[in-house]
Image 1 (cartoon, helix red, strand yellow):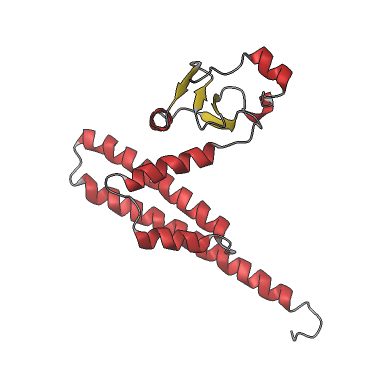
Image 2 (tube, one colour):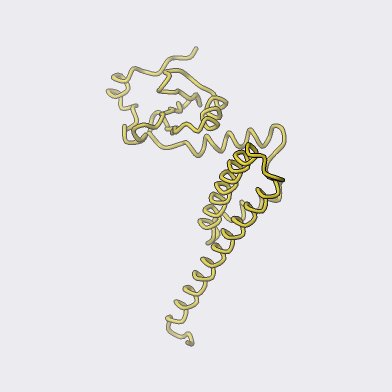
Length: 184
């Protein structure tokens, strides 16, 4: 037997209510209860991961929070959706690509790699939108133009990442020269 969440007043009095600061105004709040159920506060109903995926696909702004602590669980839920997508049907990432991503965790370049992937995905999305727009105008061979633009932007981002790595290495090497017992 499932029980509906306590009323707002009952939750506040019992201390179960996460702070209102845990979800910014204008962001759809999804609460995750200890029984692993997700509760959509906008529709006052329980939802599934498939419903959350639909929100992602619709570009809705939402946050998943732990119903008791108010901790942000959005990334965890999104990773669950990715896991389901990767295990069912045709996976997006090869085993080798996943292993390479794992190797970046804890590496000094972890933050840069995340930023690089995020920018590259956004660039791909932007170019995909342009391709769709250009296909309406019937440009000759829009796929070739799309891939050329994508490769140019990807190369620019990779070059910027290499420049940042070089600057960090130079800075690190310069700082090593400041330690006693090292030669300049």
